[in-house]
Image (cartoon, rainbow, N blue to C red; front, top):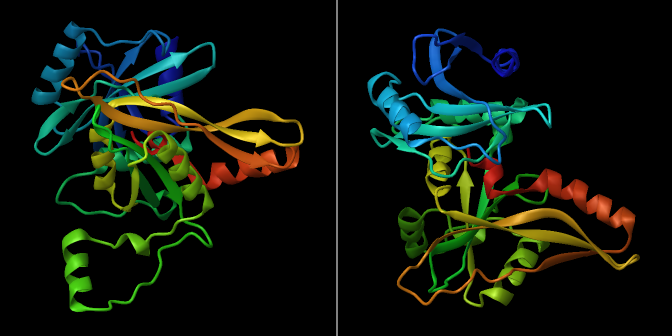
Length: 303
């Protein structure tokens, strides 16, 4: 029954065929005359879903021999939610397959399917723009903590009126050289009160933290993001403080990506407290509505 429901749901977006002769791959996902990806169906809840060593060995063998640079995903039907979820298990980049240790589960819906479609087609050396609605400004806060390798917070901002790239004039030849070497200058990226509040909250826990920005414009940018998700990820809750009722309400989260430094003295990840003050219920609802349209944690855009 799980398989039938999964096929029925995916058929609303792709052409789906069963792989009855494969020991591990259940479905082939196609678009037009081209194979887009392969899928493994798992019949467990998300919390308890794991891929065994034997299964991974079969998947790796299939990827190297048959998959022809196509990604391999895992799909499950969560009956308690009546939702189909998927995660990328293996993908092709830099002339080899990468196998994901950490699975980022996404519901099968129009937005996530569109993101996956771009990811599945991404190839180094073939520079294609993402659809305009997927353009993002990525904010990267480096924690500068000796207890962590590559400790950072990453989140995304959407383009909108008042939050767009700034026009900058080259003042000297050295400015031109800097742009050629380092790319777009940081002062050309937009920044608003939300960015400032996030950075301030992080700096209270990590005083040396600094922020830089990056553009997400191309399909290959999704491959770059995929490489990051095998770090450990710790989530901290962002709260709205209702001053009228004096209560805190969770509204979103920020995600810390890091690799523990095994050579340093063990230190827990420091807590980051971010509270955004609102006058009353209306202010909280307005903030929620705004955040949904302008802010996304790392895992939303990472596939």
